[in-house]
Figure 1 (cartoon, rainbow, N blue to C red):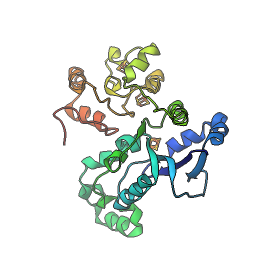
Figure 2: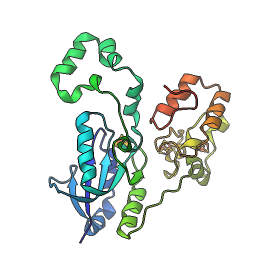
Figure 3: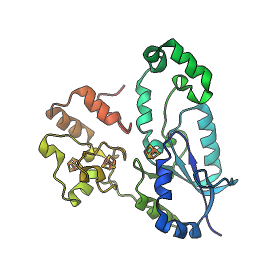
Length: 258
Ligand code: SF4
Ligand code: SF4
Ligand code: SF4
């Protein structure tokens, strides 16, 4: 019997699901190996249980928490799909802004009332905290990045079909970057989150002339203290260092939380 696979989205742009749909050349092969039972981007079917549930998006509201727990209770294996689900992503920056400031103080009372009245979905100013998926339920595997790397999705599916655990080595983006023989941006007095960020993306941003902003989250063994010190030596103001770490909300620079 084919394993039942389902996809769910919470607060996200759905770009990670699209990244999967974009695997057009092998999508049919995948569909031959699994039974896709829920996928709002492509199907209207529903199912009572899943062998593998992919959950995209960050968790904001009480009803999201209930829905996510319900998904978890029906799933054998649950995957956090993309930076929103893994780290909270850019929307979690709002955790550092007092809700009263979000609408009332910036846009005025009229805007606050309009937001409140128009649609419950947009009651952002009343939300308490944006969370990654593992702040609510247990997660069996993380597919990192904004968006995910399709090859990692395929590796995960292939491993599960063979009855093994997928493995994503905890190496820094710098390792990918060195393999690509890029000039390090620190050499030209720019700064980069690559040394503390979970690799596996082939350093795609640096390859294309930018720096790593850390979308894949902070490595568990990252030497954050040394990285922060390096940023200070490059005269990056403390608030900007905090902001760089908070961009994808994966870690707080040492001693600078809150
Ligand atoms: S991780 Fe990025 S691409 Fe994926 S759903 Fe979130 S915002 Fe979209
Ligand atoms: S450019 Fe960034 S990712 Fe590349 S080696 Fe330098 S610090 Fe690491
Ligand atoms: S280089 Fe950094 S920001 Fe770019 S995809 Fe990789 S982890 Fe994300």
